[in-house]
Image (cartoon, rainbow, N blue to C red):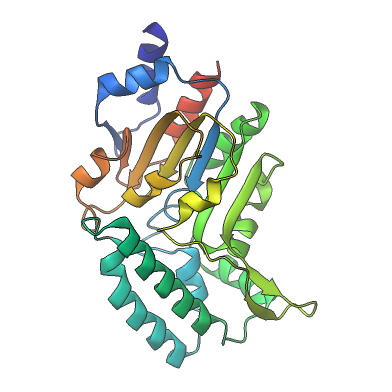
Length: 279
């Protein structure tokens, strides 16, 4: 058990005074680590998982950035959809099939509205430059570490894949793939619709059906993200970022994730875990 104990100590090594992590079941995590294979995949959400939840006093996601490009009449429509569907998205007492059906309906309706907007590629570049959105500290180092260890990373996002791709460009190595909602651009750079199928919070598991790994680190900021497990995975460690406890109950996270990062913390616990599992 020395391997798992050493790893567990290192999980706390980089947590500073204003950040903290919770381990929901220490003994269970130790047991998982002790038998975890060195060959594994990393499956991670993007918005508010790889990115900071708050920059100054505001939160920005790729979908909120896209909404900011809409004309006022379209903005009102997507806000109405958000007010209707978001309470359903975070209501984990609902059956998964019911939540999934509502999420599919929401995404289809919202992206149909976005498709009416006159958006081009330069708008995407400009919105990233003008918006306070940033990767968490430790994400770049974790991606570089995974590259050096030949660990595949699947980035799953229910947001806008083109924006994810631009933000990850400096660390978008050959071991990284993005499964998200990509805008189709004409040769002129004008927006011409979305590629299908759309990815939302209820169907991320479908996006990893082709992964042939028996072990995976699964990382997200919603309890539903734990569903994104490769079908052959027998070994899993779940890491959750509880950014705002006014949206979710702590027990929703401790019941689903092995490790919970609080207070919009950094990504170092993931980096430390990858480092120890591959040594």
